Image 1 (spheres, rainbow, N blue to C red):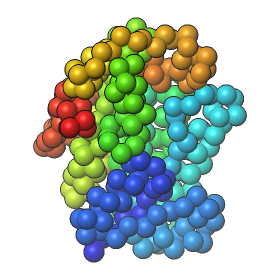
Image 2 (image 1 turned 90 degrees about the horizontal axis):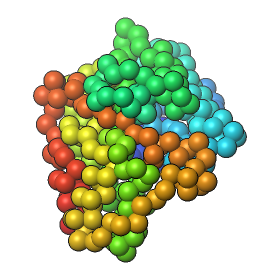
Image 3 (image 1 turned 30 degrees about the vertical axis):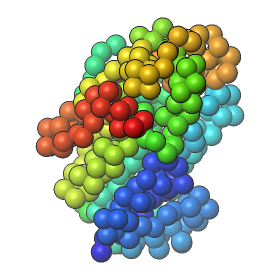
Image 4 (image 1 turned 90 degrees about the vertical axis):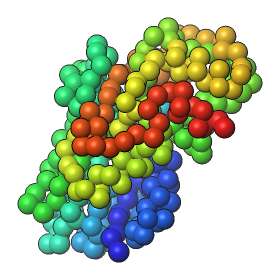
Length: 283
């Protein structure tokens, strides 16, 4: 039986990964925050696993005060640094380290595969530094995979659970202009992508997004259609800025990313477009 350790396992993606891999005959070890702060216990875990998955990071959709931005950085960079240093310390190293990033690393000027051009803003720089830290784990024994998440859509949590209530009440609408890109992935496809990369021991950078990116406007209209509800209440950008300050960019300024590497390696998505995705989530 292979063993997977997960840091940041208490979140929406982490909880789904635990369920998924437990059902696929893996032993799962959760690395709690306090363990990341001490070398001995962390090294004991890292030395006895096959796969290490890093999901640690404070919620990006929040008001970005200066103190919260520091938390966004430390919760990603420092935790990743602890894991990488442990991998480099122990004698028996995991075969694969999968660390998280986001499509927010790209600018919004075009549709991009994994070789797209990066933006020069807080979120992109955070992702770049996060990835660079994770890549330090690469050695003769440990491969490193970086998963750049789009918005993860699933019934039980994450962004979709927060979004759906106003739509069910007929109070949904576009955010800002609605023209901003919206790259997303169904939680089932995300879990299957983890399994695909682990089973084949692949490394490198992967966009974890559905093959067909959409826009906020198309997402809004499709969700209204699937629920049979109107979508006439737009959320103005100035209101987002009042609520989230600089963090409003996450909602008002999206990226268009395609999963070229997964597709080239033969991965088959179950939910290829936004209509298939939303129908499965509201049925």
